[in-house]
Every structure is written in structure tokens, then in C-alpha cells.
Amino acid sequence: MTTRAEVNTPAEVAAFLKGISRAAVTTHTGVDGDAVGSAVALVYLLRRLGAEAVFCHGEPVPEYLRWLLPHEQLFEAPEGYDLLVVDTSRADRAGVGGTPRLNIDHHEDNPLYAEYNLVNPRAAASAEIVYDLYLELGVEVEKPAAEALYTAIRTDTGGFRFRNVSPRAHEIVAELMRAGVVPAEMYDRLNRTATIEQLNIVGLCLAKARRYGEVVVTTIENEDYERTGATELDSKEAIDYLRSVAGVDVVAHLREVPEGTKASLRSEAVDVGEIARRFGGGGHRLAAGYTVEGVRPEKAKEMLLAELARVVDLGGAR
Image (cartoon, rainbow, N blue to C red; front, side, top):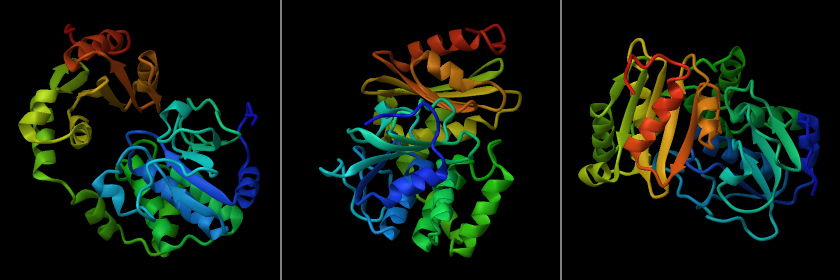
């Protein structure tokens, strides 16, 4: 296998997909709506082309997204299946092992790691790129695929609130509604799924939030999981609430994981993708993340504030 230094065209990728007979589709670890929705929509597309296609991922898919899956989840790629990776900025973040033949993504720092690479940083979600392949191949988007694509676009745009929303995103959503998507029903499926444990851990995240000038940071540790009965995945919902603080340019959610500390960063003005890359992570300019191994959240917060001090006003606090 050889990789290319430039992005393939949709026509080239469409021709590649036509030649596939068996495909295993995966996405990045720590999945979100775009990850699962885009991958599932690609599975449906491949099946319409006559291929045997499955979704596989080494981690359990969160409950609020599990209804999208076209079959019982596979936790590894079947032998002899071509590996296709969606919404994954680096090959080492893929949900299963193997050599990717196709890389579909919208992260600007994607290094084009597969045999075929269809990467468009201007897309609001990787789902836009998958949708364009439906158009390129002349395949009708049926309701299950439309719901997967809608989930992907809706979640990666923060319910159409983030700055990555474009006229194109709304135009695609209009077509998905014509294919049978009902936004009110999708809202219930995606948002009315919380547990009391999730509610408690989010509340604890907010209670532990601290402001440092133009930055808000919250930390969650193992004892917080024990106290609430929640998981690290449950706590991730807190970050959007942190964004509501007036006069803040960066919000950070640091939570303890077995490897150390996982961080999620969001901003409306600061390139947090560059901050994340300094810690070995990555993502978008205004939404990124990373993991610091062997470091607990309070220490990780000190390290993060030291980096942020170079680009934002911490109000004299460090």
C-alpha cells in the first residue's frame, strides 16, 4: 500500500468504493455523534453499492448513539475486510487496529495517512463529506442513513450553534428532512437519554469550575466518579455548560482516566488545536483535546494554564 501526499477527489474515492467487496468501518476513540453517524452512514452507502460492510469499534458506543448502529457492534475488524476510517485525525486514534485503506475526515491537522484520503477541513462535520459521496455515486439517502448523517451534523455543530455552521450544513439538513428525519424526534433520542448519575457528575463538574481571567477550567477525579456512580464519558457533557460564562475565551474540562488525564478544550477565538498539539493531541482550531499520561487532573491543570498564559489573560492567576 502507498499513501498520497495530497487529498483524493470525491470521484476517485467513489470509484474506490465501487471496487470494495468487504469493508470494516471504524472511527476515532472516545466517539461522538459525528464519529458514529458518519461511520454508520458510510456502512449504509457501501451496502447500497453491494458490499458486505460492518461497523466495528474497540470501545462500547455510548447509549445515546447506540440506536444508530445497523447491527450488533463488532469490537474488532473481521479478517479479510478493508479498513475504512472516518472522522479520525490520526491513524493511531482509530478504534480498531489495521492498515486503513480510506481516510475520510474534516480535521485540519489530518496527515493523510491512508491509501485514499478525502479530507475537507471546511466541512462542519465528516458527515458532510460522506453525504457528498452519496451524491457522487447517485445513491439515494434512505431514512436510517439520513438519521445517522443528521446526528453527525447536529452534534458536531452544537445543535447548529457553533461557528463551523455553514449554509451548506443547513442545505444538507433540509435534504435529510426530506428523506424522513424529524428534528423533534431526533432531539429526544439524542438529548433525553441522561441518567441521574450523569446529571450528578455534570453538576459536580460545574461546582468545581474555576475561572482564571479569560479561562474556565474544571477537573474531575476518580473519587468524583465514585461519589456519583458516573463514568468519565458521563462527565463530558459538562463542557458545553462551561462555554456559557461571559467574557471567557477558553474552557477546559480535565478528567481522570486510567492513563492519566484527558482534556477537552473549546474556544470561540483561540486556536486550542495548537494548544492540544503541544500535549500530543489535536483536533480543530476551536475544539480539540489531548491526554497527558501519568498526570492527575490538578497537575494537568497547572501544565495547561502555563501554556494558555502565552495566548490569553489569566487575570494574574496561575
